[in-house]
Image 1 (cartoon, rainbow, N blue to C red):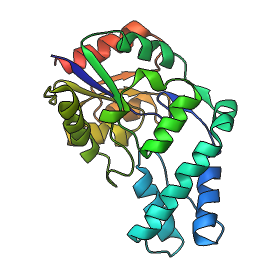
Image 2: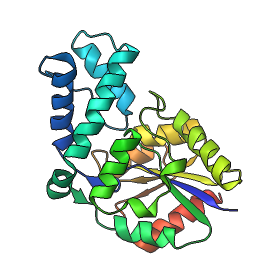
Image 3: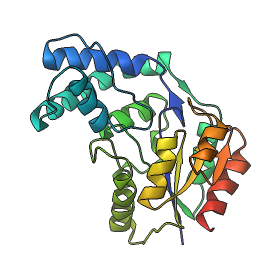
Amino acid sequence: MRTLVLWDIDHTLISIDGLSREIYGEAFHEVTGRPMDKLADMAGKTDRAIVSETLRLHGIAPAAEVITAFADVLAAAFTARQTEIKKRGRELPGARTALTELAARTDTVQSVLTGNMKPIAVCKLTAFDLQGFVDFEVGAYGLDDAARAPLVGLARQRAKQKYGETFNASTTVLIGDTPNDVDAGHRGGARVVAMATGASDADELRAAGAEIVLPDLTDTDAVVRAILQVSTT
């Protein structure tokens, strides 16, 4: 029985610092004709939720057509700045080695569970040449739902459709860096390995209920052990 490994992207595998805010600002202005005064909190949230909340912060109703227009512009803007993402961002220590190790195993399927919409997820990982380690077809993304928890079941469903295997709570592992990731994993029916590589420290992640918390991805053996231990608990 294989383990479905679902990676968060931002602050778990890579970081592009303030570039996301800049691109959101550009997209907001293009769609609404107004400057973006405030951006919704992004930590652990989906693009659908971030776009909707940002619109509300400016007194704009998040109608479906507005969200769609915003998403289209946002995806195009990220793609257009892919070279800049590589230049200004960084691959987090240990990420490539961990992905490589898991990709070489026969008992794991790697994908993503991310707040990014799919084109942005592909863009970000491609900028750092990490796209070949994950199966984007079975991932779950930030336009699939406003909430993060339902994405777990969606990823499992897509994995079953592609691989003909049933993944359950004991064989699905979510790896992320925020309490929202931990909550989404538990609500969605997955085990969680939390990385203290973002704004939340190890104590916050443990308090949120993460089964295992690691400081980062640099100890590849520890990462693999954590994933496999959690998946068989």
